Image 1 (tube, rainbow, N blue to C red):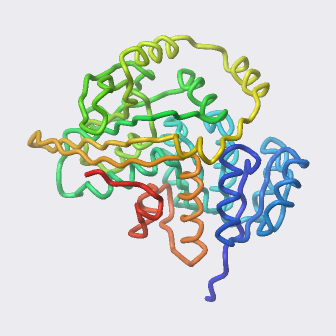
Image 2: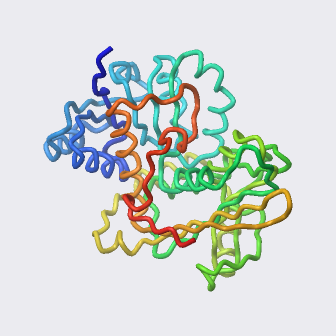
Length: 350
């Protein structure tokens, strides 16, 4: 059978990360369509980018059947704990390739628990194709051996001059309203954000010693690997910042109030110079069954731009005929061996 390029939709194309993905796909010369709530914003985007085939108003609570004409759905409509299920369920029902950029553990965990139904439908679901958990999962995959047993695999994030997007801020504020997890004795155990801290030292970040628990989806991904006892993800912070995060996480503002505040806020566009100053360091710490600890460290910048590059590279791979596994799969399974750190301007420190 002759291969044909996929019919691709970026849903939530007018949001911060959605627009970056649109720009990157256009730059790579990939035909695609866009969807969102605002006709005016969609038309404006279509006029800017010549590779946009169609711009369609899609309200996920009203005309979700509009997704049916597309082969690949890139879902950028978050927070996913609130609004992701209807899109995901429709994509599973209609046997689509579903890709999202979620950083929300409960949403991802629910998918893995539904994996048998996804397999039956012959859909492919890939969560967290974003700079945090995608990079972490790739790094874990490169340093993981199926035949070995691991006492602990954990990730640590350090951000310098980072400015989270409106969507990221809302997701973080909503975290306490949903279940979050750490891997403990091979089970995903509910753990509140900032529930515990570690005092750590990494050579790459000598001025930061407090690691505060922050739930990222790669910990849910660890469960699929079967041979890992414990795991968690952490933010590396100063002692003052750690105390502030712990205090703010303990206050539970009602969901409706948070959404109202979010809707009133404005989208702030950063300059190229500001994006380049947004640096991150991601450290993977692996403890094997003998208690031997190894670390792997990567660093980069412009995190949201990096997410757009990762998504676009996956779409390029799909459009060239890559056959993805069916079911709920890890980002590392979606990319296979086609991963290049240097192409993403990511430095491997060790």
